[in-house]
Length: 341
Image 1 (tube, rainbow, N blue to C red):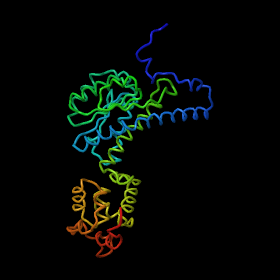
Image 2 (cartoon, rainbow, N blue to C red):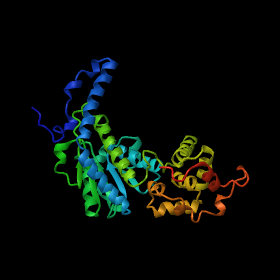
Image 3 (cartoon, rainbow, N blue to C red):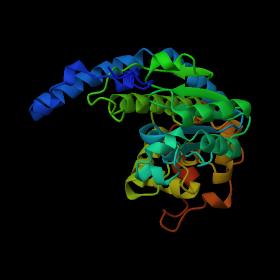
Image 4 (tube, rainbow, N blue to C red):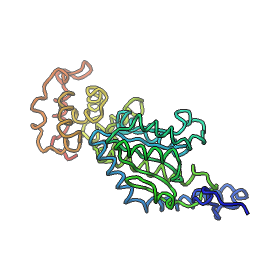
């Protein structure tokens, strides 16, 4: 009888009895079976909500004190970290240095599998050692929870004075993992044994999405459920930006478009310009004084608190505007300043 390896006992390697006959099922039955397994996965992530909330607190505190976040992983887990880091700038307007990713095997591993790289603990130590500093957060992403690359990254991060989070889908081995918080949903055996791109990958993406979205919401990077720091660099996003400005500031689309141009492409600043008739510089200053919180600005009770110094050349009418019509004048005639946000 062959001896059991240390990998054979991992839940991510287990055989799923519910899908033993998947190669003999109809397409509809395969879909139904996979959806049934995904429902188990969703329940597993839900059970980790308290630990996910702790991770959110850790990351939020780091970013508030000028720290950064690094997602570190190998294979599918590493690619999910790369995806999360890549999506933060266009979604939340963050600088690219704020949320970064380190993947085993380097950039090439994003597009072509380099499975052996997950065992290179020295490479992880070098990458974290040269990029991570005290005050940062390293989020290790490992479906099995025992990936040497991730474990070494977390150990190096602790020595560097960084906070640590481990996201895994294998609770028993991760209980001994050293991290400030271990988020370990247990989605059960995969539809295809060992293929962690399936339930484990989806569970991991849900956790990472929640960590970044909740953190950015707490940092004021959204207003309600609107992406007020999106980067309007395409026709679709420019139109979305105009809609956001018009709806939140309570002005007509034409004025919203002018405010967006005046702001230099900053939706958040454009909303303040359109709402209160301020210059770009003054609107930016008001936001800065409110700690970057758009809600804090829009809840100001009186217009005069914001418009005391609103005059300036930047508010002069464009040639396409009716004579004598500045943004400030248009705002005063089109929106009540005490309108609730």
